[in-house]
Length: 336
Image (cartoon, rainbow, N blue to C red; front, side, top):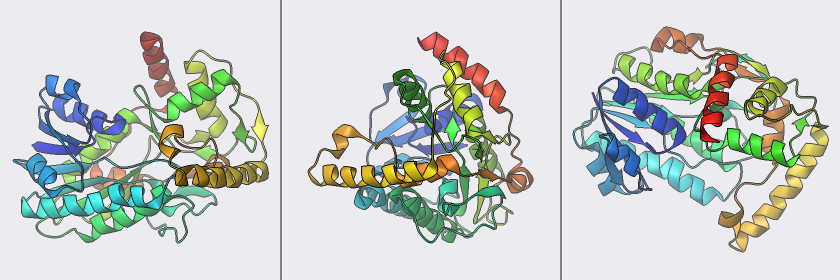
């Protein structure tokens, strides 16, 4: 097949590109940045914004499937920037797919679209969308996911994947932040670290996208539906975090912060960050160290039943958490 991967220069998008190339498929990447390494591997690259119809049209030339991985992610920031990338960008890309007669559209969503702040234990796709969000990221991803699923029809089959907490070698967000805070002595568990969470090793997350594309058609069981995707190996947060910390050659973390304290700190930090954003320095300081959304994510159970993905997509995770730690440690040693 000939595939367009939005955000092909990113962590998950790059893994999807790798999986496609390994299977002998043709790949085009659409991204705002320039990624010479992709071109060196034979990937056609189009540089542009998702909200630019011309860029989308150029990127879709000759493609029969789209993997829409690109998104603005983060735990803070103004609604307008998230809406521009996650909602308007998706809308323009869907319109361009219809104009270009592209038949399949695989959308990367997030389980955060159903997270209401409480525990989720073995949640499946019957969970409703949250009605209130404490962050613009899940709010705009929920809106975009609804849009993608509503677009499903005889000419454009769509499916949404909700990989939970994607990590592994090459991660530029989750793993580096954990290691940076552990090195500086600032890493603490919210609560006692016993909250059970699912994760998705990056190779499994990428494979789920190719599985979805292989099964997607207008009359397929997966058409017009969303699926949770994980590595099927939920563990306590402390096991996940300390597995990454030890893989980085550091001592396990033992410090804790009570959830009420973390929530209060998150609310205070959010207020400060809003002021900084208004005066135009947000882009220089990045995400805050804590928010109420992040505190609840770290202190509540959220793991998911992936029976539907196994059944309808043929998805079968291959890398359990412990094997992921081994691979991460080897990668970190190589890059040190």
